[in-house]
Image (tube, rainbow, N blue to C red; front, side):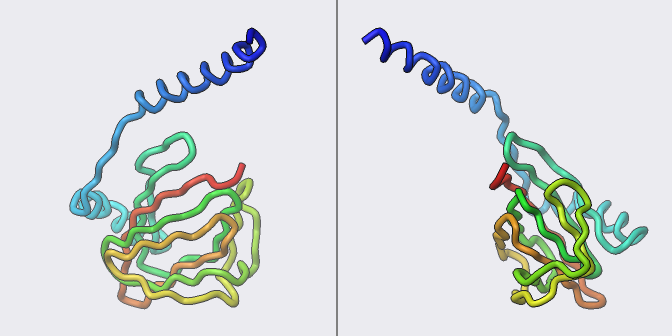
Length: 160
């Protein structure tokens, strides 16, 4: 009996710690209107650079949120440890997923970037669409000339 109690003690302490942690985490809420208003400065930044800009909104233990704006095609990407979930707020684009990242280079641990994606599947994106891209899946956002896209991103750590 005493051995069983000694084995349960660390597990009980862990459960209490996890419960306390979840009680101290704050709740965040962004309306579409708030995000689109916040994206105005991303539009300005994108115009001054390569046609894209993003910002991290909030970081959590195993995921974080971002807001992104794009007026030009992006390059190919593959995140080895993080899945992407996009919620399209405004605009239109084509998402290319699968295949392989062309001219792939490691830019940070677990982060691969390249000139594009070869051999993927195309999906048209419009406001209200939600897309999940699993960790390790090559992807690229394609934006037609004169078009833009604004989207909310949740990056979730799927692998360590």
